[in-house]
Image 1: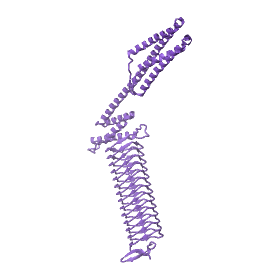
Image 2: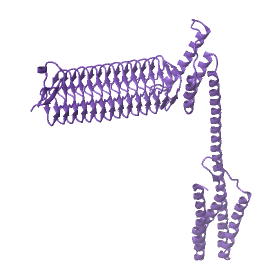
Image 3: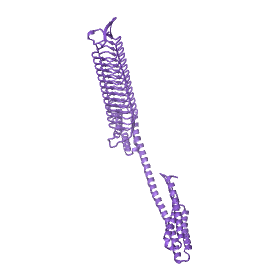
Image 4: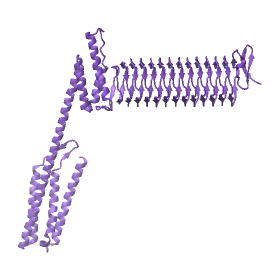
Length: 584
């Protein structure tokens, strides 16, 4: 029994008890005023009438009580004996009240006439109340019957609609399996119209379209123009392009027929000039997909997990200003054309590990809110990371840059690693900011390496690295320990006007070209033990705030007079070598 049934039963019991109390009060009123019965009969009649009506109303309402549920109304038929009880109650009320009032009225004719009239009035009132309750119950039944009919009609209409949708869906699915391209196109447009009219089936229909695109595409057996195989291949391409256009149109929030909260599963699909510009996707799986021609995702918002793992892009990928709210996985993907992710936003983990960029890769002004992984990737074309912000870990370990690469004015706010990277051409880290520990250990710099005006707020290590081109660190700031131990500079190494706020370690470093430290400040220990200087040494206007160590540092043969030796040191011949020794 639910709460409203309990409430109704409580109300009925209260009505019956109240009626009984009113009836008792009426009796007391008449008994105390027997002498003035005729003068005060109106009060007694009112109380008697209310009491009788309340008792009968409670009994009638109890008889009409039904059992209800939220979605289903179960009506209980009124038993025949309740009608007999109502008639008997009305008759008993007339007989009982009339007999009692006659006994009080005595032999006075006028009082006896009034007593009979009062008894009849009570009986008629009780009967009228009972009849009123029956009318109310009948009205209630009619209303609920009407509501029930409407619900049944609504359910029937829903069932009919669902059957119709199922039939249309099945027919369209059959059409997609047809051998004729025109029939397959008709099936796609039928599915589009069905999804537009029935939003609850949109994801299912999108899944069916994606399943069609995942099916193996035809391959022309003959390249002869006009051959049957060539025609079938071109027709299939047209069908696939139509399926892609349907998805592209309805995934754009600016279109009139936008389908929200859609996810795409195009795992292993063959896509032709695929485009979803300014779209919005709940989730997208393009793993192992092949993108033939150019692919575009201009300003597209990927709200969930996006997966391009092992995908292959035959043409250019263009998706500037795109937003990846969840993780973006491009691991092991292959980009045979140019890649543009300019001003893209990666709010989740960005994974480009073991990815192959065969042409230009443009990440200018992009934003990585979490970790960015490019380890073991290869960039055969130019790599642009100009003004990129890395809020999380940036990992470029073991990455190969075959062409020019630029991180100019980029900011690295967490740990950064280029350990073991190979940079065959010029690289530019000028004006970049490294906030946490930075690793350039075992890196091979094949061209010019620019770190001019770079800032290292924590420790940085270039140990065991090799600079085959010019190394420029002018005006760089090293707030933490800077380690260049066992580093090789094949051409010139410029550290002019640099600030080393902590230890500067160059033990066993090799300078085969000019080593310029003019105007630099060493606020911590400057360690150049066993370093090898084969070119000019320039330590003009250098300030060593603490100790400097150049023991066993070798100086190459040449015009010693052109060297600017660090203050407190001198070039001396030790056996067959020139070394730096302390100037006593």
